[in-house]
Image (cartoon, rainbow, N blue to C red; front, top):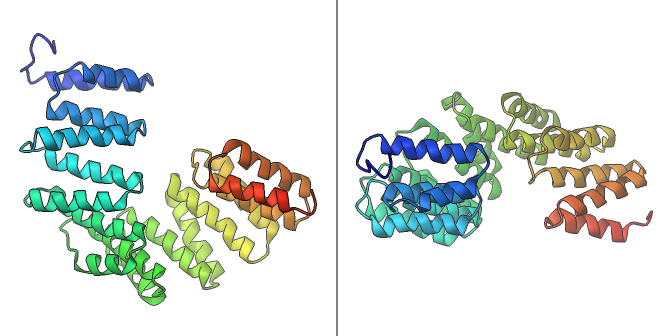
Length: 311
């Protein structure tokens, strides 16, 4: 059908069906191969970019998105492709390039719906770069018709205040999300950031309440991070048995969360050491080294093993 009736309105549905069938079978590479066999329209290139993104082949994804921008500059998909390229550069921690892509989108497509997203992304990028003053200046001027985007801007602004040491303004900003946008999922991320602030201040019971509220509402990587911080709350209070149980829960409940599981295992190892359960500490550190060999936590686990007096 795709070959015989290329101009049919049903072609797009047919392509979607074939592509999704490959994906459901876990055959991403074949999905890309199928897309490669088609005439490279803007829509096809976008699909290829998304397929590469799903495979975490970020450079290839960017290449396809930029082919849309360069070859189909007047297409309605070009601004979306430019935005996705910027997002993908963020995943690569190439923040300056991501910023330039957002700025290019705003300048080249000033009427696009993606301008609002790009302005918000610029604020987020400043936070990720550690340019907190730049983030505060940019986000303080940001306005949007989207309630979700407004709440995200407050989240990034509150985070920037917290990282700048302006704790009062950080708490005020993050608490305003709960007041103004209680229906938005941003509320959980605000609770996570508030919990960290209260923990730093020694407000352990309030911090625990914030972290547990996140876990009640979610089961994703944000909940995983909240679970990790519960372990940190108990560790700060030298309640090592409780801390250990909470750290281990990160691995048992959120095994998919490869960012926070090794951090939690490090915390568990520290608890085992404090409890003088040295064999279990050793096993935990070796587990980190074996399962997460390329992580900074593996390096720290190796350092602890080498310096341990109990080995």
